[in-house]
Image (tube, rainbow, N blue to C red):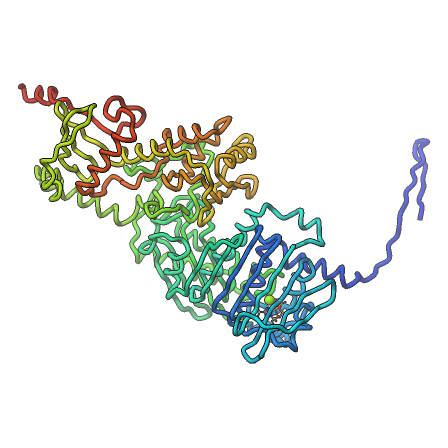
Length: 624
Ligand SMILES: Nc1ncnc2c1ncn2[C@@H]1O[C@H](COP(=O)(O)OP(=O)(O)OP(=O)(O)O)[C@@H](O)[C@H]1O
Ligand SMILES: [Mg+2]
C-alpha cells in the first residue's frame, strides 16, 4: 500500500506493508524458546546437572572443552531413562516430574517445565546414552535434524546417563557470536559448578577442562569440608556453621567470620529449596548484618541454604529459574538479618574498623593507594597456589594465629630482660660454635633468632641483624630473575580482578599473555587470570599488587614484571616474620642469600633486609 503527500513542493511517498497476524511456525517458536533456557554453555551445564540430580545421581562427571562451546558432557549414575521414554525425551513440555498444576506448589525436583533438553536439542548436536538398572542393554539417542535415531548398545556403566552436547548454537550464528571467549565461558561454568558442588557436598563431582582434571571431589561429610576441598584453603576456623528453624522456613549453611572477606560478593551463595538463586533481599539482609563487622566494599563468604514451604515461594518466575518470589519478603529479611547478626555476635568477632585499612595495622598487608586501579581487587577465593599461600594476607592478618603470636611476644617483653633466652633456640645452642666463612665478611657465626623475626649473625668486625622475611623475599626475587620460566601454568581456580581507569587495557593484557599469563576481559572492568608464568608459581607473588603496578606502565616486559615484584614487595616468601626457624633453616637462608644475592652484605638496594653494627661502634657505646 502507498501513501503520498505534498509538503513545500516536495512529494513524500511512503510504502507501507500492512501485516496480518499469524501464528509463528513451530520451529520458530522452538528456536525462540530455546534462547530463553540456553544462553550460554553455563546454562546448558545447569540444565544437565539438574536433570542428573533429579535422576538421583550421586556421581557426576563433567567435561567442558573449549569453554563448552564445542563440547560439554555429563555422565551420571542416576536412574537412567526407559526405552519407552526415549521418543519423548527431546520433545518440548514433556516431563516425568510433574503431572498437574497442583504439583507446581509442592515441587520435589529441579526440573518441571519439560523444555530443557528440547531447547538444547534445538540449538546444538545432542546425543544421549543411557541405561536403567533393569534394562539389559543401553540405549543411544542421536538427534539428526528433527529426527531421533535410537540404537541399542552396550554401555560402560551399570545405570546412568551420559549426555553429550556439541557445537552449541551451530545453527544460530547470532547467538554464537554473542558468546565470549572459551576462557570466559568456562569461568561461568566453573562458577555454577562451585554453586552446585557446595550445595551437594555429599555427592562426588569430577570436573574436566579440555580433558584435564580440574576437580575430583569425593563426597564430603559436611559443607565446611567441601568448602575446604574446593578452595584448598585453611579457612576451617574462620567458617561458622549455622542452622536455624523458624515457623515457615529453615536456614542452614556457613558464614565466614569477619576475618575472611573478599573484594567481591562472589562468595555469597544463596539457595532456596535446593536451587542456587540470586536474591537482593537476602543479600541485603546479610550485608546489613555484617555492616558493623566489615568495611564497605568488602564481602564475607556466606553459603546460605533456605528450605521454605513451597506455598511461601514461587520458583517459576524465570525460565532459567535463577530468581524466586517470596510471598512475604519482609519476613525473609528479618529472619536473615537476625540470624546472622546473632551468630556473629555469639562468635564475638571484634569490630574490624577501617583503621586497619589505613595502615595502622602493623602486618605487611599490601596497601592499595586511593587512586588504585583495583579499588576492591583482592582476589576472590584468594585462589593462590601453594601451601605457603594458604590464607590471604588479609585473612592471615586477622587470623587468631597471628593474634596469638602477638600475645606471646607481649608476654615475653613482660618478663623483662629475659629476651636473651630468645637469642638461641636449643638446636642453635648445639650449633653455636659452628663457624663459616665468606669472602665479603670473613669468618661468621649464626647466633640465633630474635623475637622470631630477625637472625643475628656475628662476623669478625660486625654484628648483622637480618630481617628473615625480607631476606627470604629478596632471595625469591633473585631466583625469579635467573629462572625466567615463562611457560604458563594453569591456576586451579581463576583469579578475578576489578580494574578501572587503565588505558589500553586490552593491549596490556595482550602483552601479559605474551609473557606466559592467560588473562581475559570478562567485562569492561573485570579481568580473569587463568594461568600465570611458571616462575610465579615457584616463587609466588601477590598478583593483585603486581598487576596494580605493571598495568600502569606503557609497556610490559619481563623486566617490568620483576621491577613490579621488587618495587611493590609483591613477593610472597614462605618464611614470614613470626615464624620460628630452626638453626638449619637459618643457616640455609643465610647461605641462599650469599648464593643468590649479589654482594649480599656489601651494598643494599631497595628494601633493607639487614642492619649492620660495626664492632667499633658497639665498643664506642661502652666507652671502650
Ligand atoms: N540425566 C538424566 N537421567 C534420567 N532422566 C533424565 C535425565 N535427563 C533428562 N531426563 C528425563 O528427561 C525428561 C526431560 O528433561 P528436561 O530437562 O527437558 O525436562 P525437565 O527436567 O522435566 O524440566 P525442565 O525443563 O524444567 O528442566 C525429564 O523429565 C527426565 O524424565
Ligand atoms: Mg530438566
